[in-house]
Image (cartoon, rainbow, N blue to C red; front, side, top):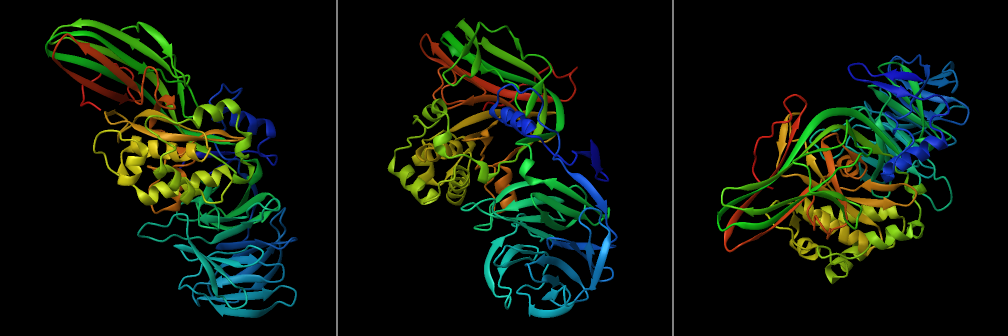
Amino acid sequence: MRTVAKPGGRRRAVAGAAAVSAGALLLAAVAVLGAPAASEPPSTEPWEELFPVAAERAGGMAYDGERLWLVDRAEPALLALDPTTGQVKDRLPAPGPWPQGLAWDGERLWVSDSEEGRIYGVDPRTRLVDRRFDAPVSSPQGLAWDGEQLWLADGRNLHSLSREDGTTVRTIPAPSAGGDRGTEMLGLAWEPAPRRGARGYLWVADRTKDKLFRVSVEDGTVVDMFPAAGPYPAGAAFLGSRLLVVDREHKRVAAISVGALPAVVRDEPRVETVVFVHELVNFGPAAVKTAEIYVAVPEEAANQTFAGEPRFDPAPDEYLTDQWGQRTARFHGADLAPGEKLRATMTVDVTAWSVRWHIDPERVGRLSAVPTDVRNRYTADGAKLLRDDPVIREAVEEAVGDERNPYYMVRRIARHVQDRMFYELSGGWNVAPTVLSRGSGSCSEYTFVFLALCRAAGIPARYVGAVVVRGDDASTDDVFHRWPEVYYPGYGWVPADAQAGDSPSPEKQADAMMALPNRFLVTTRGGGGSEQLDWTYNSNATWACDGYCKVTERVWGDWSPDREDAGVASAAGGE
């Protein structure tokens, strides 16, 4: 195992040339499903350092089938490198004073020049610049060739161009678009479709974000992303299934085997103690004849590991399991006089992880491949969903259209919800058709709408609920968060938080569909209508009074990185 170190940050583990074996991929997929895995999910994406480069100011990169071409803006020149050693085999003078992007179309090297605002075609056999046209943008950056058209980055958008005269064919937003500032994208690389009928993808090396993005050029949807191997990703090129990226700061090339990425990767452990409290206080005047509190018992998963089992005070009267497999602890109270309370406390020593899923849309199975029990349980209707309501059915037809790939069906549904709703915490949990027609909702209401649309489309969907870090490591949560998960054949359950991804940024939209930050203690997984939790999450309570009584319900969770002090919970407002 070698490492690629990023100055000023943590060291990233790098696998050898074999990257990730099929067995490791299977184990990672099992972790996604939530079943016990034989090993932990990998901690980093498997970058492999290849060789140093002689370029002083590396830029765009392209592979012509024999040589790896690299822009060196310092000379300025185009360097022909041996793709296995990085040795300079040839060099051509750059066609302009400030070369940036580089692409190979099978005949010519195409070079973008940001100072002159032009794109040049260079024939490496004749060493002549025999094509040129004005770029359609003021600051041309990275270039790529998709087999038919050139792709050009300009800091905010990605443009498909005719190589004949530079005519813009199509424009899609750049992955990190949506902010006030643009970004630098010198490295673009085209990943050809693996088979007939599949899609090819444009990879974007974002120097500002230090990330690699896999982009569907049909509409700019980001389908994958991960950190670059170094702090200044510039040029990018494909050699077979391996994506090569040059790091300008370290003057080296690293590679990653895109086809062998692990299904789930986790990093950034956050060690905390969470004290979750649910209490009922009777203010009278009558007695509470009977009361029940149900607390969802969390389980270990890719995003959380525990130092021991959750602890309860007092001990539960019993443990129950609902129809979704969710375990709950039941606490019973009786004859609560005015001023008395029933209180349940759960303490969890948790390591919360930042987790990222790598879902290849071309490897997601058809809906017919979903296991029968999963399909039957998680496409069924529910009291909050009303999946057969005309509002839901019409929305599904509009959102999904003729798309049949489950991954893109989910992304289209998410986009449909985001285009028609905005977040509003106004109290109450209305049914999905009402929420969608109203156009606003809480995280729970977003979840109900998303589940209804997915289930109406035949996509298994459920929800998870969690206690959330609110700001500092030591914080109190009395609002909580709920989001959907969808089942992808071949991968299992994956987050799909349309509300968290409700942003104009393709990066943020995608992040909510493939990642969880280390801010959550997930307590609940279910499909709604639980025998103990009903449509709530984290916990639930019921009570019956002997006449009139006013009962106040308080629920909160305290996070503390200091275990010695974490056992003392401070009261906070109700949910």
